[in-house]
Length: 180
Image (cartoon, rainbow, N blue to C red; front, top):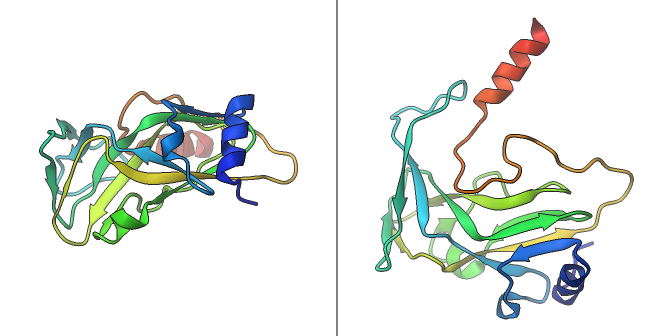
């Protein structure tokens, strides 16, 4: 089941969902709008490699906007910090954003019970588009979970502080240690 907006608000009051900063104006019937922070991470490598950390640079999105171009991935993050202790968080783009040909995630719209941090957004566009800092870019919604579960405790992305590049190379290191 998906929580209603009013249930999200009740769970925030109980402390089982955290959204900081919280503004009731961003509450929807069954989701909450999250905003884009003012920085982006852009990879510098012409070919990205899963087995190694890829070099990147960070840019500030100016008040007058930043032009995204098709064929690239731009990593951003939400302005809001979120945490959930008993629900499965999910992230989707707002329809107004999608209608401009901008996607906010390629595959990482699914969270785990216990996730705590800022959401890294995998921005990519169909056509060139100018984006702006602090715009309501996506929405978070929450599912209930059935059965026993173990909360998310990954060291890769938990309690992040900023935009995070892929750390998939750590999976290869872990796999190598398991094989040896």
